Image 1 (cartoon, rainbow, N blue to C red):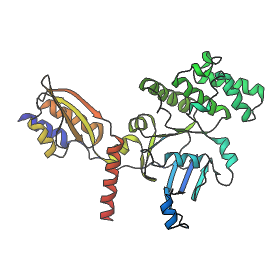
Image 2 (image 1 turned 90 degrees about the horizontal axis):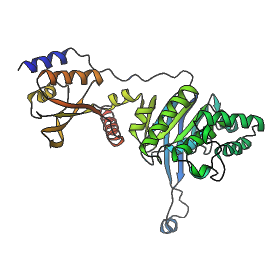
Image 3 (image 1 turned 90 degrees about the vertical axis):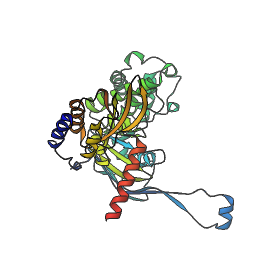
Image 4 (image 1 turned 135 degrees about the horizontal axis):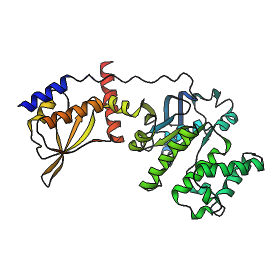
Length: 365
């Protein structure tokens, strides 16, 4: 049992996981306080006949508090119907909140929406918002005119933006010949015409294939955020996209902001990280020993054995250092390992754990 002793020594030397410390944002470029939004509920004829003067409403946003730092890429994560699009419409002054305040660069979005629109722009991803029978450059010139940008400056700015989004060689081509990824980049260029400080992107990769989506995410991070220093709010229902791309993640569920934090901290706060292990010894006693020591959950079979290898799923608390120690302990005990990798926490798993955590907190309140 020398392997077990080795594992115990490794485990005992590790520090305990630390609680999440939320970052302070002293001068946010976007500040949302207590935002509530309600919409009238649709009613059938029978309901109207029974209660003609009733005005039932559905609350879509419940007191949202959120700050965004300058130059930050914030992922707004949530399932369909969570309130992401409604929040974006309020930020872009398309909708008014029923209560609460929104400030962009210190400006009250309700009192001075025109000034806010000069600083914050929603980048539409709808292909129908482009003129397909015009070239990319002509599309930009049309929208420059709508922004009252002088013609000479509009031409110069359009050429700069086509270069920025890597469409300079395609500037004279008709948009109807563009791929989905090219159209996405053109719409980003169009949004940047007015030199906004904040971009709103609502599920920008939902119509892209996996390769185009990965290319677009790299472009968004490297060019728009890192080079242009533009603040980006990205709404998505993909946990993988939010965690891989964003500096911080805010999780919305049924109109409530249920969690915020850096992706790795958020996963650690919400629950143990899951790892996939391929082994030829799924019944090895080291797995039970690690569970007894509180360093992993029970090893669960994920897939049947193939060519002698069995896929197991482990939950390991404490981040990458603890996972490395578990791997060392398994190796020191002679457990054959062919694969050991962290599994991305899915949105469904995340929301389930957040709800469970909130219920525990309410019981102990």
